[in-house]
Image (cartoon, rainbow, N blue to C red; front, top):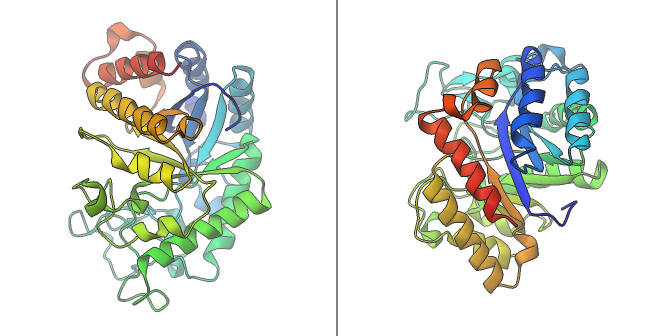
Length: 336
């Protein structure tokens, strides 16, 4: 990590030029006073890409990125762009712009666009297509350059479309090896070539049976978890768990394997506090406090001008938003 201070990270999805000024005000008026020192900014296809303008699904542009990066730097915040790689290339059968414009990259082109969960969760690109990485690297490079970033989050959570029986390249192949190949391809470009630190979600690297996370979203039941032993150990794992558990064994497993791991919570305050405490306990018992440096507080609703302004006025918050604000305050106070 770039600082000895505990990591207080805030994640959000954002891709709107129109809401940049409210977002900047939110950073200064809310995140800075709460001690947030990392922002994981999930851009995905919402950036105005110049290398592939046909792929842009939002309005956030290069000038916006430079302004946000400069503001964060002045306030001691590390801004980390997030771009979903491999999975989450759409929702249900609906494809995002990559798979719409480059259907040859689709791992499951036979899935109809109107497919819905639980029939189908979301599409992936094919990790063995010979041309997909070049496109992904172009998009990553634009985000790194625009945000002047020294770290990059590749997503990689909840991948279920992999080694499909109808994919001519992936059919019959080991899912863990395919997943590891995708991770290692991203690592080679981001770390070895671009010199930035690489973050990723950890759920596909966690064995559900071993850990007792009886949920195929927060742990693997699909055959990818053995990839944990096939990827570099200097990748930063953001290990998300939003449900209440007595213990969170994945933290200790990642630490024992040599990774730096940052637990990631959502709005449920009790679950978040328990998660942080158990993560700190495991790190302390393993003598690995330096590799469990803090916590990521995730948000999964739509951010716009009204939401930024509402969050800056605690009396206007209710329900999930109020609990999220309380969780951020409590978690920040425990990271000292």
